[in-house]
Image (cartoon, rainbow, N blue to C red; front, side, top):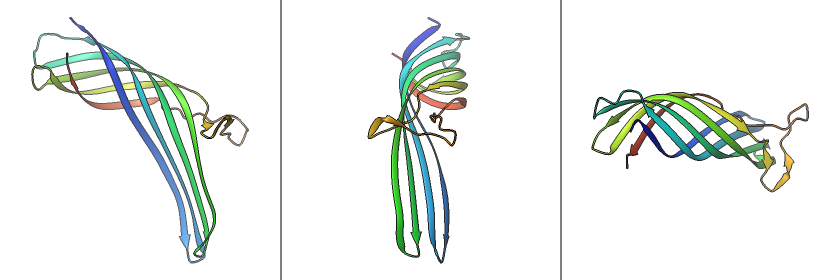
Length: 160
């Protein structure tokens, strides 16, 4: 009764913008990365004495896919010189141990907060139009988007 298993879904997003405007023109470069993942989790209830509060340890394993979009626009005055839009993809295997506390609001509906770490094993970014082409860095090495890092989470769910 102290172990729980279930399905987990997650969405992560990050991006950046570099831009410069003056009377002579503009340069804008946007990057946007989005990760969608689906997986399984196993929770271990640390203390099972309360019907309302439930501290737990959790381990999630998920498969994910990143969509990475790079857009660059250059204009001289009001005349566009160059507009580029490139989209890359990669696959991920994610492992996420965490600790949290769950609060039951009704008999089976709950909210929880968690703190943990995500470990990411990522494939190289491949051009969406042709998966034989990869994004390369200045050393001609394949670029990987790595989503590893500390995570704080806010969750809502239903216990069956």
